[in-house]
Length: 210
Image 1 (cartoon, helix red, strand yellow):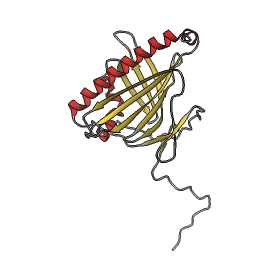
Image 2 (cartoon, one colour; image 1 turned 60 degrees about the vertical axis):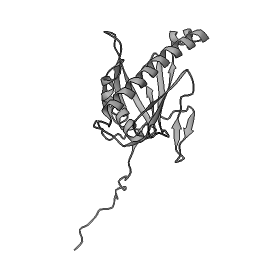
Image 3 (cartoon, one colour; image 1 turned 45 degrees about the vertical axis):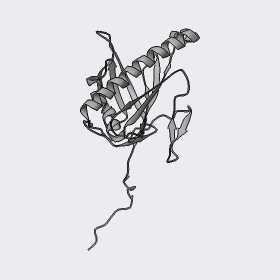
Image 4 (cartoon, rainbow, N blue to C red; image 1 turned 90 degrees about the vertical axis):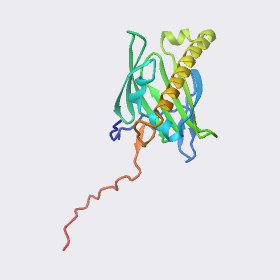
């Protein structure tokens, strides 16, 4: 999956953050309907991470994802649904650490959502994949969601879908045995990080010597 350089400035997010091992800040969902599901896959972390981040391959194993467009390294457009029902919305990748972590936020309006996925090595040499998601109802949906029963029902429904998708991914990657591609870039605050940034250009004219 090809990625392009993305130098767009992301809008700072005031929500709660977590700190990674390098001292950098990672965003973490902090409100709304919380869902957390974990599945173990019998492939190494690098393989699981590389295949998961090949977003265009999701329709090959998912029962709800119909298509994914990679607009930029930090921006994708997802089409999901059942039967003839379709929903299309953009997703911004906020944080991405190879073999470790990915955080995103949906840019749709009702409801909005955000989430994260962590990749952890297991003692058997496999990978534990944990997905956390939160929905943020707005407008009339926000009023209806004030009911604790509505929150529980919605959370259970989303949890079932997330768990089923994790199982589908497990079967898919274990069947492949290896990833179908890889993008090893790092994203911080919605921006791609470069290992070797170009030095600033001097404004002083450079005259030929010799």
